[in-house]
Image 1 (cartoon, rainbow, N blue to C red):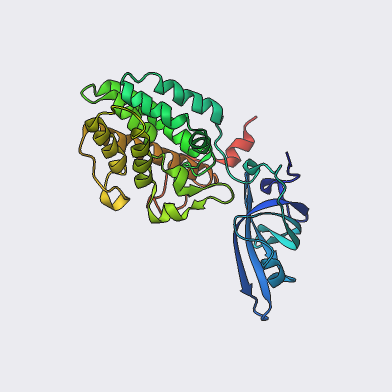
Image 2 (spheres, one colour):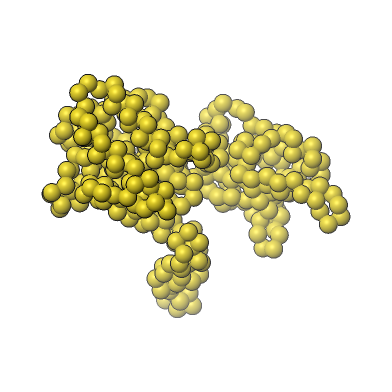
Length: 327
């Protein structure tokens, strides 16, 4: 497996950086003197860094595309107190031994362990039709592999490799607790809906290079694609009850809660309502946590979160002067 020598988090002004990075963005621009230059945003699993190509920019722009993994030769400089790479050489890194996990953020939890936990929950389902459906879906090696690697979103929550599995497991574990509390709701249907609610994201999001939406994701979306997948698998099962299939499809179609958030239908069953609120809770908890973690620790408040439309309180920041006086 090809390994990296230096990660973004370790780059300092003055370093000579010859290594491999994922191209998140690139833009050919014109300087004030009228010369073309290339703006790049590069990343690995530890973060992002800007890059600039000042010489032979047009030529280098034709070498690679956004989403490619490239090898660069560069020199790290400080520009307005931010480290930036001045790049002199670029080649596409097409070594099959390159580990994609080195270039995209990944879940802190072990994907194999999370997947095993989810399969164990499937084992607790009593309804034979729902259990058979889930076992059929996850016995498909391509689906199971993609499900363990996919992000849950491009940017809002669980936006990293393994994020879909992490989110789904968390949602399902919470649903198990809630189903035991609201016993009038069908626990097996709730659990099945929770496990499958975002499965369409394995087709909606591309995560082989940079994380972005597929054409199908933009044109159709994960909600409809999840229903299509479930319908196709139900068709392979003999005697699957039509009413059960109808109620499961409704959970998938309504799990975003409201029309303006992309749900074709609003929740109209106990099970759909529960899945909607728990999904929303887990997504927002992750979004809060990630934003707090990535916003530094200089203030008791984070910067304004555009999607959540609020500042987030992180708690009182200890007085650093007082800390230094304590022995």
